[in-house]
Image (tube, rainbow, N blue to C red; front, side):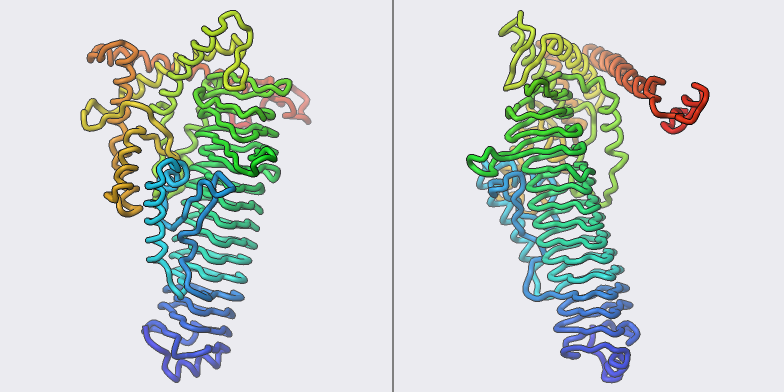
Length: 573
């Protein structure tokens, strides 16, 4: 970089550009005065090769190669900033009980540890220290715009660190933030104290305050969020979020939907779905947890605290603080102001199959900082189903003649209980067989014990504990090292899964299975999966049956024309 010559300054000024102090303006060796037009430069400005500033005010900023700044009211760094790094986000708990300090390299896994493991204060302190170290490395009195960016029609862009290939079109206000490579910001966006990760898109009147927007996330159509984290491939429009931890693939599309004070993952919010997190006693202190695959039907409501099992469909209003975490793949229904549980029925839904299949196909990421596993058959849900069977038997034994049983403030009809046991047992056989087909026996990869879904990653709890201990001891001394520890587990995922399944099968048999018994379990698993697929296909067929052609072919004179319209529109031919 070099200063402009006197002839270049004259040429630039003839084109209508002025500077507070030309000695503070530095350009590339191949600078052409045509790169500046009718603009004003203040403080320190560095202009990369081929970068252009047109009808804009730029102060204290470095502009990368081939970047265009056009009709921007103010692109400026007014004071020393860390550009959104180390901003405290009061996720899940509006009273700041689960603060996550964000930075532009934080993963869903590291953020999960910071939010959820508050019982390990030494861990939280260590993680916050690592984020603070990143923030200090980023801190500067000069803003940055990377190479090959386009910033046009924006108003106020202040204290910003902008990566390469970023597009900003008509944003209203971006203050104290980072836009990572390939991010896109659209018209009327207002954001402060934030980070937008690689490939994310924030557009059309979105408002953000103290938020992290993860890789390939889409926020659009006036969505409003405060104190929230959105991780990979989430997609939210129209509605509102306040103090949420949105794990991968959190989806909300409706104006009337509110996500508040909770943890979500692979989640879908129906229209007018809502939660509340206080009882007008201690303030907004409560939280709800909606694990992987949960859905809210239109108009669903939950009063926190509450938690469901993975892949639970919630319908109706629920204010009794249910805990159905032991029952995955269930329906939670409201009847006469009571909460009823239908355990395992979501195993028969084609919608569940479709969801699990579609998520990996919709992965838009390139960096892939968050570790995500999509397998339908895994130790996390299978372990939960095994516990669910034991719990259903225990509930029944307490009152075998009852027509309706109660558990953690929910009601379970006797018929639903029996069906739940049958469905869970079939799914357990299917999953154990599928997992025994993966990997191989290896003493190095002991997957035994409880597994958790750690912000999208299926992982053995004891391995998480080991990672936590390594963070607390200082052995894992950077966020990158922590992410690598989670990736090492992920690389050997199949072997860990095989180990868990073999140990679970041994517990069922009462002895370690031999080769023949494992082969038998694998074959039984295949048969069980075929039987379950037939159930879900029947569910699909019911949704595609002629009885569902209501409202199709309404101008047709013959039934076959109506069915033809139905099948063509639904793509069934």
